[in-house]
Image (cartoon, rainbow, N blue to C red; front, side, top):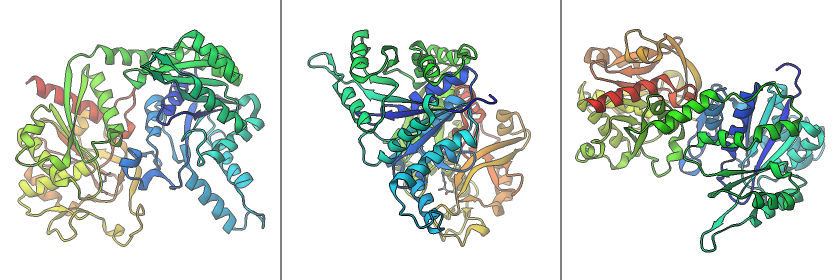
Length: 538
Ligand code: GLN
């Protein structure tokens, strides 16, 4: 919308972590978007890593990759799945990046000999990064989620920066604070004291929340909400409840029922454009609710103890199952536990099998065994990134007879490096330096399963990997029945392989899961799930 001065919403959390600030931020964003505003969501992460790219998934769940190749927090995945609008490097800012920028400026002499301090230099850099979403990206509304919990030492500079911004922006900025209302089952009571304390902690930092979202396992009475409003200087209708729901995609509707969008528009003095149009969203939810028959998918990976490590894959499967009118029944299979002896038992119920992305040696032999099972038993199969690479290795070993074939990531001296570093990458050792990150074009060969899925010749998909299909072997593969159905139009790198003689065996070097959204399920996941359903009814 032209000429609208950007509005800023800051979302903080209190009492406990993991209350779902990202989902509340995404829900409000969705509602405002459905009223005709352009909206984006930004995440400020209080840790010192420059980005989550080097973080172990056990610590932080999946690393989400944007079109412009930023390795970001998994919350950005929620933002895109809700809004259907791409995010970028600017949508995720860590303390590490803020400090790096400030220190670089200091080294260049940009502070003209001044003592560089947290206030104003760090806070100014934080403010600049928040305002960029309005000035550079021109969104009408920017919702900035501040990671961590109020009171944490780490998030103090962020809190201070947004306090200052509120002062500068006036009605163009507002605060939403998300807290927990615990239920004590022994006394059958819901407790508001933690919320009161958490708002006090915010007030000590100079921030008065405009809206409180109370996360709870149970419905909160009007009286309880009035009490919270009175203690916390918040208008009674601006105390909103967020009761646990089956699917996070219901949250926008729950927020709409309580007029969270209207409250925000009132506080931000945003003119009413039109009513919220959530029709498509609601039909997705209905489909999800009405689907009773299951489609059984096995996901083979090494991080299954923490399903957040596969967040986008699981969501992409959910979207695809819903649009195929089925309920997803997901079996997470630990790749380290899969052997030739037990694979049939472990995967016998699977209508379709996915072998997950990953880095390093651990669990790869189990992945190879799972690929072999899928190929030999013609179970619909999708390999993603490392999963694709393992399907290439499996084919080399068991079909081409390339003994000890491997990816050179796992075995430097393999006689058949069917997955390898490209020549121009070989001298770069800096971690991350050689990664192919972000969206690249892919040209799809007509008449293939991939083409059938996409229905077009040129697509763009996001990457996050170092190793590539070694094109030296392509003729061996194609002669033996595994073809390259997608290649990079500029470099010729192989992006998709498939086995045309099987029902559905498609592996991709990129990560289709990052770009599946609620209103736009990903074509490869749609086709894979459809093939899995057809397989189960045979
Ligand atoms: N480890 C593999 C590579 O670097 C695959 C990475 C991935 O699955 N994201 O190429």
